[in-house]
Length: 485
Image 1: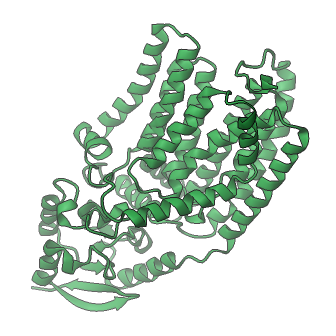
Image 2 (image 1 turned 120 degrees about the vertical axis):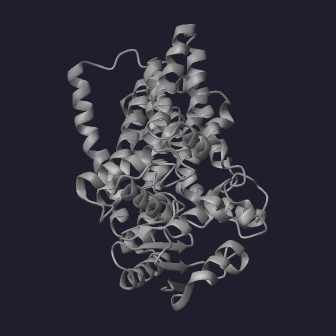
Image 3 (image 1 turned 180 degrees about the vertical axis):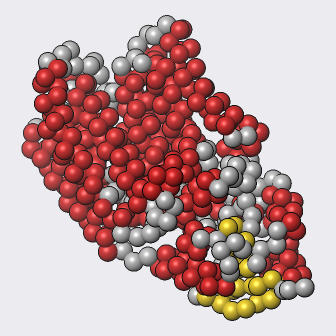
């Protein structure tokens, strides 16, 4: 009975012609599923502030800006560069090109998982893994599952790392791990199962060197293409306050439990087979369990539990479910696929019908900003909606695109760990210098009495008192125009 969980690759994959026939039949199905499941992503200009942040970054970079200098973020550079490249091809007025890339990313992940499962078990396992993955891939709040943000582009890199390691292509596996890290730091967690595969295969020391070199070179290259000191600070050493668990513990834990429950519903067809097999034997593909465990650790890292963090769990869950279904009766496979399809339909409907009040607010605010400023004016939006810059087509007055980097509110906290003293190290001196050198024509206080409101931030309060007059409100956001003379 345990034979279905053995990890040895398939002894033969059939002739080259049969391989082509297999993929000719499977690829259109996976492509159609990828397009259908991500159809809601094309409905709205934006899904969440992360997309807005990336869009603004890409515009700044396209206009000669420098990452970690002209514009900053706590993320590695791969996804901002991807946005910049997409905008160079199709223009920066829409995220359609990036949404297409997200479809390609999900399809690539599904194909890699299908290839992994087919090599380990059989043709049916390949189809199962690819289909189950895509059905579950949207099983979160649509703002998390449909947005073309960091985690979506991490997924094909992690799947590629496992695919290469399974075939003992250690240099390529290292490069894939590096790409996962460069998409988002937590993507590097896939190194754990890759190292286990290296150890299990009894690879010589030269293979370990190949893996290390493959992982190091892309990261070093990215650091050199940006600013090495800035790259190190913004991606590794400068986020201590953000990663702290202190502050709004119940708020953050509530979010984590809610998102865990949502993903559990999405995986209703996958979890029972895995649990049933575990009752028979607690053995199986150790690297798949390590992949799941390391991905879970990545979700926990930083103690914020945003829904899009959970996307990293889905590929190993899909493969573990596929493994379990190999030793269960055939009707269990049909039940798993049907249940997953029903859950997918539920989440697809949620994505198609869910209202977007935050987007409506940002659009109204952007319209007011565009009306009150000229195209060349600099604007400061004090809030957590950087998409206002992109929607209004106005230049940010600061390299800090949200108030979070200056107050630590970006961690989703609403308690004591918010304020000037919790800002990223060195942020306030840089911000004051920017305001003195190029005072914004308009300041938008979009805090709406949250913990980072100007009355709680002395430096911003002094800036507004010294040179700005209140000129109206939009949905609770206050507009301040610079005094002349």
